[in-house]
Image (cartoon, rainbow, N blue to C red; front, side, top):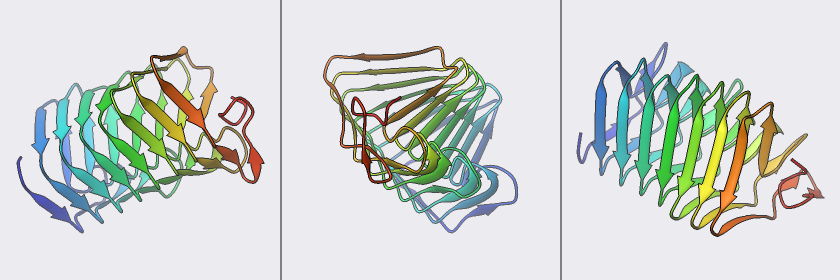
Length: 212
């Protein structure tokens, strides 16, 4: 898929614009806006051993119960030169993206900004998943009603950030304006990672990430 525009698409299950199961998806230079899913992945749902690559594209103002912009389950996704902005998980997890159940999401040259969820305002990973951020990734100005406004790392999962990653000016209502970890496997930060100016509603962060 190249040079396409998906606007106001909707699903009563997963993947408001595109649903991929046990398949390969390649998207470039495309625009996703105001798409929605009643379950997961307002624009994209990549599940069941699928492999997706999305580059030079925008996902904005999309909504789902979980994974407002993107949902990945038991699959792999790579993002490069992306903007994920103003997406909402209107029930619970992962404003821009929810990476679920032994999945891998790698992103570079990507901005995740102004997204909203109850948990994981920007990105949420859970259940033995891996999030790799490297080479110019910005997770900024996202909002979580409760926990992990920038990134929420839950149960056996790993975050690996390196080489110019910025997690900045995110806001959470209860805990962890920057990164929230809960029974996670590991958080690896190396080579020019900045975590700063994140807040727990009106309180400056401890150690730059809301104390967790």
